[in-house]
Amino acid sequence: MFQVLIVILIVILIILGGIVWYQHRVLKQIQGMVVACQQLHDKKIEEQLKQADQLQLTGDAKQEFDKLRSRYNDKIVPQLKAIRETGQDLQQAARTTKLLTISGPVNDLRADLAAATTALQQVEQSLQHIERQSKTHRQAIDRIKKNYQKFHQQLNEKSFEYGDSVKKLNEKLTELEKQYDHFVELTRKGDQDAAQEVLTDLQQDNQKLATQIKRVPPLYKPLVTEFPDQLQELASGYETLTAEHYHFTEDDLDEQIKRLQTKVDATLKQLNDLQLDVVKQANDDLAAQIDHVYAVMQKEIDAQDEARHLVEMMGRFTQHAQRQNNELIGELDRLSLSYTMNNNEFEQARQLNEQIKTIVKQYNADQQAIRDQQAVYSQIVDREKNNRDNLTAIEQEQGKINDAVAKLQTDEQRARKMLRQYSVQIRTIRRQVEQLNLPGVGQEYMDYFFGVSDEIKKLANELNEYKINMDNVTKQLIMVEADLEKLQDKTNDLRDSAELTERLQQYANRFAGNTKVAAAAKKSRQLFDQYNYAGSLEAIATALEETEPGSYKRIEDSYYQEINE
Image 1 (cartoon, helix red, strand yellow):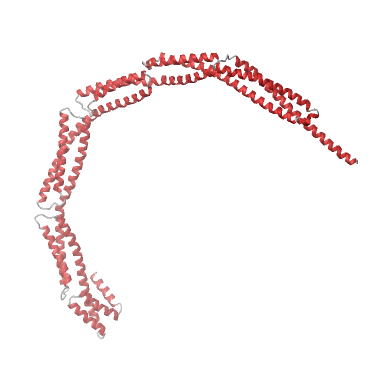
Image 2 (image 1 turned 120 degrees about the horizontal axis):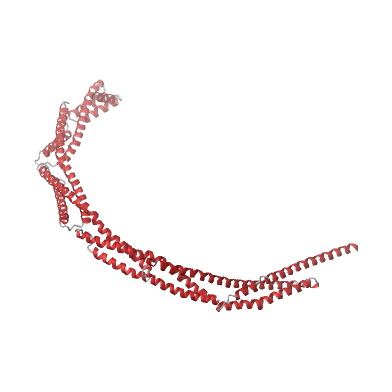
């Protein structure tokens, strides 16, 4: 029984401890919310409202402020007071038996505190916005006023940099100052929203004017200083150069200069009307066109000396080319008496002569233009440089033709020398065959021999023609060279077959008792008498090789060793 009482006592103590812990926790939460509510009240929103009220707001800004003040006084202040009172009541209830039923009211208090905090933050942010906007407007007033002072100073002290455009700029500045006065009045009355709309437009227009004031001087300067001086210089230069009989690739330079001056005047008017983008493009065009006129005139000044030098040089060059072409045609005439021209040399020389005549005609025209003081020097330079290059190419072509025909005599001498060599060679081959003391020579060999002899005779006939065709001579030389080489090979084969056959037949006498060798030797002699020396050699060689292997190779090696020593 005692033990049960102890357990019950422990349970009671635990319950009492939990109640005490819970009570402490709830009291701490309630106290925290009461303190937070007091801190919200301590933010001194009343002072912010007083400061905003001193701004003397009007219009939409005034209505917004009145709503904020009414919301704070009529809703937020009573709400904060109610939260504090409810907190105090809940603190007292938490110390009584109502502790166990207080969680709902505590949660309601927490929700009310959160709503009051949000509402107060919104009011505070709106008041800060009104103050910031007011401060921004005051700063804008000072800044814009300083800008206007700077604009006036710039346009007054440096009006020489703007010309008549200063009138339009001052008009714009006056309009902006009126707009500025309206903005100041709205700000003074506290009509923040209306003032903000005006301020936005005013800032944009001020920036536009500042940009225009900055852009005008560099656009104005070339129109009143650089371009007029340059056009005056061009007009004077054109007059001087034409008096000195210069002519240009463009005939209307004087009219171009006048049109440029007219464009300068028109561009100044556009600048006075502040058409700055149009003026910028016009200035770029004027600069480019003025540079172009300078270049056209300078081109002729620079080309004069070179043109005169080229004409003088081309006079000698054309004479030399004509003389050289006449000499070439004369040489062709001389050589054509002895040689056939196969490569259209006369036609080529005639075409070169026509080209030279065309160049001479152009040269004479340019020379006359200089004498008549009608020359466009740059064009003469271009033409005569081209003619110089063409004459250089013509002389190179003349050289090629001359070198080609000059070889005709050399080639003829070389061909006659080769003819003598071939004649000696064919006679040498004939003596070689005669010295073999053969019973005769086969018809195939004889036909080939006489065929080569006829080719040599044909070569001789070609060289003995009244007009030698060196192309035909060259072809005949190639043919004779190849056929003579082949004839020599045939002659060597004939000699070798005959000599080896005689040696093998002598060696075959050692095998007189051998019927196979005797039969082969007989057949070999028959073929030999029929001038078939290759067949005769094959008949005896085959039999001896079968009877005594290696005997033919030994005799053959011995033979070639003897004739090569």
